[in-house]
Amino acid sequence: MKTLQFKKLIFIAVIAVVFSSCTSSSDIEYPTLKQVYFAENFDNAGGTALPSGWNSYAEIGSKLWSGGVYAGDGYATFTAYGSGDAANISWLISPAIDLDQHEGESLSFQTCHDKYVTSTSNSLEVYISKDYNGNFGASHWTKVSYTSTLPYPLTSSYAYVNSGKIDLSYLTGNIHFAFKYTGINPSTGAYQVDNVRIVY
Image (tube, rainbow, N blue to C red; front, side):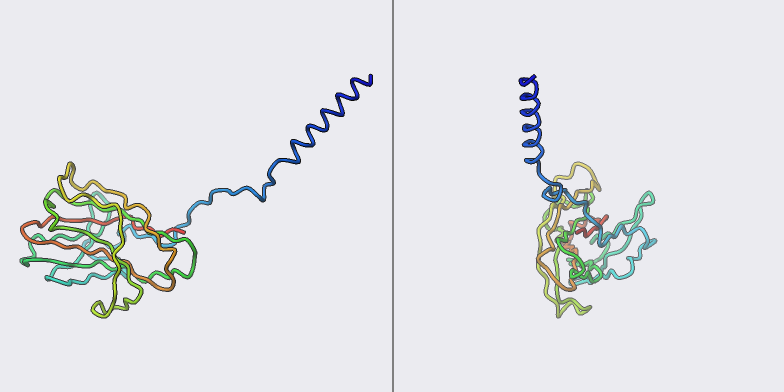
């Protein structure tokens, strides 16, 4: 009988130690789902118009970014084809984004190009400005890195590539981000941008 009671006591003691050593729920870090703060699919522009708040600026040449639709899916696009210019540099500039509303923001998007992008004289770069107010010449832009489509060789036209996350968490206040297209004849291929997201 004493042996049985002693075994019970040992069992209870072991259980107490096990449960007392468990991590409380308040100490566990659960992964949080990212919330979308800004999204642009370019689906609401219709035809060649850009969505409200987006602007295009031709730094060199005369052509501007435009909207496009294929199989019901909208996108923003630029090509130097048919411009008649020796060179084109054109910017697609986002609406103002207030980065004081949240923390830990990051930017992502998708890009692709067609088979006529055959050299590095065609390129698509991404920049961020903290002082753009509609006057491009008076603003300052900082280039950021992203996972881009390769200029060539191209195995499949218009194969979208995910940009990866571009960290915005170190920035405060209003910013604009922009896609900068550079095209020099005869390399006159087209680039497309779609599914832009800022999450936190």
